[in-house]
Image 1: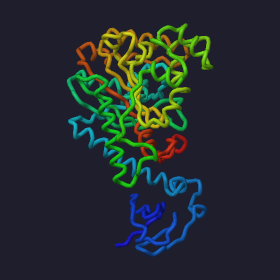
Image 2: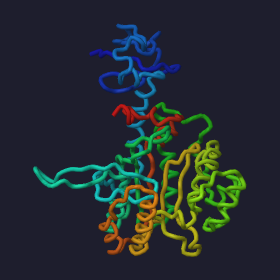
Image 3: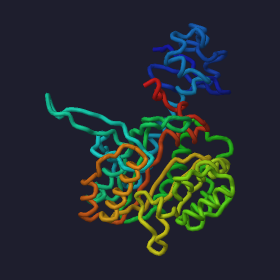
Image 4: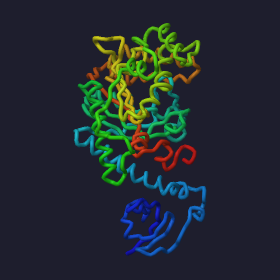
Length: 398
């Protein structure tokens, strides 16, 4: 039986069509003289259409069909990417975990705000406060403490106040953890994963952006090296606030009176370093000052540095990970410091996750892990610059 097809895009010898709820490609020779918007059955055009004639010009179909059906094609590309991610980890003996999204503690990182959710436990029960998770990190580490050696999760996370070309309040996140490993093993995983996903997309007619070679070696820089090379000043160890403040001002960086050394270094990374990474392919920035350790442990032989890293592709951060801090006492002190800093800045103060701390106290083995933004990875591997292009329903249309 011949089914109706909506032509989404024409690219040289390939025509992308929408048929029975799926995006697929066919040879242009089988559909001669078609253009985006046409409705065809077999080789016959049954309706010649223009974007202006689509029903609901500002509706979903019109939006999905813009730019030669770009967003239709990205629905297909996302399916390829998710399948590639799962096959990559399955081949390496990882167990997929499905952690909850409603949590008692969404995380205490200073610059992340959570989405609040109130619900009742059962019919007529008392209201209960929960939050949508900003990351499944605490839950995943609790499972590592239970004895899981290699795990990953692929789902959604939520962050309030984040919207822009590279941000959506609800986003797809991949996290994975290895017991008995440090962050270098996770970086090797990430390099293999990006190459695997790029090849999978290429096999399905989603070529990588011009100038990006997924197989090229990754560059590695410490935070100190990255700022000295691309921001114009050497921050030294990064823990002397007077030195960092003075050197940053010398090169014209905006420094506020209440900025800490960590605040200034983060601004230098965001404003000076990241734009200069755009032409460098994939870059790992590691060896962070201990004041910016987040949930990372310190280097045993260089305790002023933390075993933290971030991965950038085409100048955009896609991943943030650590050799995990598994000392419950030090972790509680960091949580208390984070809560104090949040209150000082007038940001919401969330509960400390006591179950997470209890899991660490029971004996979490040395481990490493990372969170990777799936929407950003798809955007960058397909040569796009706006996260909306890979989202069928961004925040404003959800």
